[in-house]
Image (cartoon, rainbow, N blue to C red; front, side, top):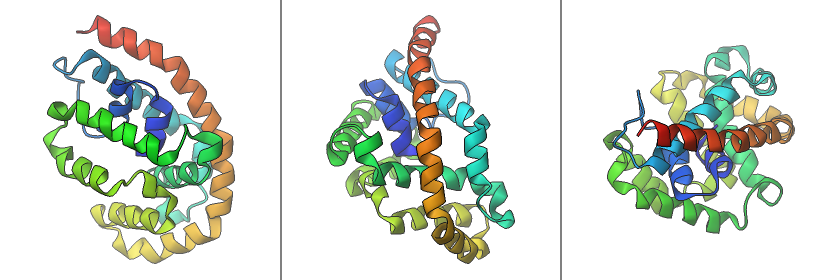
Length: 202
């Protein structure tokens, strides 16, 4: 899952919301120096990633991308999922989209001292531009995907990706409506486990 979906799945709680963002930047063992609630949020983030990577419905959805893109399809699908979530916010989201994203940014700010250096610039720009709310814009999604391809040295696949997204977006949105409830049920079950784990390892 990408950032917006992680935050909705993690809601409520400042530590869980912040973990929905910072979980992508905390590598290796989760530091014991993190506040307990943030450790639980990062743990939940990782558990959701692990579950989504194994979820058959998401694997089937990733297979809609053409063969040259299959290796990076799971990452691309995560970005598409945030667009689908933002577009279907009244059905899957929590309250008003921009009010929700403001709460996410406030939660991240609460744990600003623990934002890993590698994520500082990205997190700052996310907040300044309200990136999470702008996932409704397909152009923002294209830009995020192009960034992934560039980072992996696959810029030449950009035209194929754009064509695939245009051709398959409706089907990918239907897929999202099918697999997202499974992610939500998993996250709800994992929340208390993450809290117990964080408290027992501090």
